[in-house]
Figure 1 (cartoon, each protein chain N blue to C red):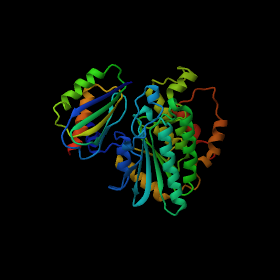
Figure 2: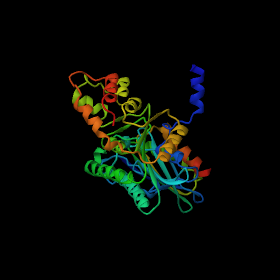
Figure 3: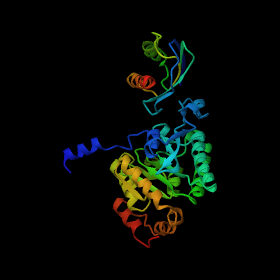
Length: 287
Length: 98
């Protein structure tokens, strides 16, 4: 593709990554169907940040929108990566849990509400440590519960990525959509560098970090189900396709044997790189 | 963290609620809700310590003439520069009159 064509495509496209959490949620739901629950004007601030001298946000960084997807009831929970790194605290966590639990209640009453989670998060909010951890555990339980009735679809668009306990939440989703800008990992690069040493894992080496934890690598290694360009239209279409496909035969967390066997067979004496990690996860018996 | 309350004379009540911005690094969020005619009450939470004089100067220029709609404005600021602040305020006031 020529330079000119590249620029034309960029100007015509509708970036998803550049949207705020609220805009992302509205852009995915059927036009005109979206309404926000527990929104910023309800002023459910974190009660903990102010006490620690940190400016809070009126929606605590989690946007819950109810509406329709392809004419069917849906709820979208979008995490705002710009506010405190998308970290989950007491209020934002409770909003996300309630959205998922209410969707499951709907399903038990015959209303086929499906849920979409837009991950843009470093995981637990350290200033609200235990409450954030508790919320994330409840999010895990709520995803597993709801995913018995309807697919729960996760989207990691970037650029924050999805880390910590919320990476486990992403792994529990029925389907996971990523872009090349996305990253998915239990620990973020700086934490790994601190633990393993800069010689093994240089958090400032961005090509290296993305080659191991970026969306493309995670898709190839089987940890995500679709890799898309940063385009709102493409992402919405993939979301509708996954919903139409219904529940996967086996959720990913029930397909863990393959991964466990691979990890047991891993030779950690040599430094892993992107190519060897791909080969490693692709070889062996498929789930 | 700096906390400020500013009052200005104002006109008729604002007609709608407005939200602009995010409490991201170098950015701020502005929430506007309608209030009774005649008063514009602004509450600021700012991560920039010692910024009170600057906030007053910047908001005086916008609101001291008393021509704004009556509103309750809440600003949650994560150390935005004066340039970003004026852009966000302009965005919020533009949406208010849209």
